[in-house]
Image (cartoon, rainbow, N blue to C red):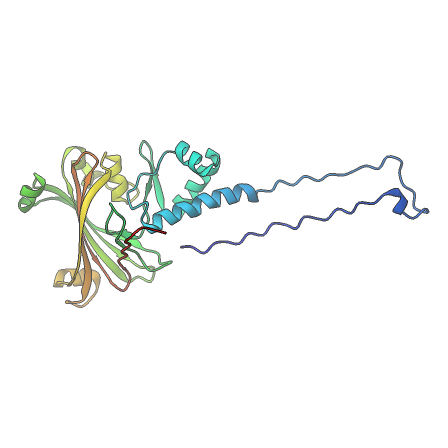
Length: 277
């Protein structure tokens, strides 16, 4: 979690009150003293409301309650939940967008794009998160149509779009390699030509009407083969975490299968069980 900022408000000047009987007699006192009242606009109250919204949404996102690809409720609903004005809420959402927790897409809304790698988008029990405070940069290696006849029995099609990406930590170290398969159906066929929206597959799929609803996730570990080791700059045989996630949308349509190879030095799995007290 980002460190909480400490905000200091200017000290409020004390007001000394005096009556004429306490004043020295040799000092004239005007018959009608004029009182000067200074008004200060304290922005801290509004800022605290915005920060409260920002902190709570970040908590939900980083804990997995709002996972990568989660579509946030509308502004009106969020404003009512947090008991803030829509103007304050928009400022909070703008801050989350600036810090890369969410992205907005016209006609879709605000979508979680937290740069941690979520390994289970349904229950949120397993996550692969970059080291605290690390900045992760994503590089697209391939975005093109392919044929996979072996997947026809499972997904009902052999036409896919493959998206290969690798991620680097802020120091340049390669920490993950991801290969996504997306069905090349309908308007998605144009994806290799038009590219991703905001460099995000989640936002792009949502814009095409695919929002994840359910799926399954398998997690294990295995040594890197020669091809993957070269792409990740590691010796062949280096053991990486391996996750294979399949996601279906709200209409039950297959929308994505992604295979992720994750450096266990930079990623971890989190399992939470039982009821919170």
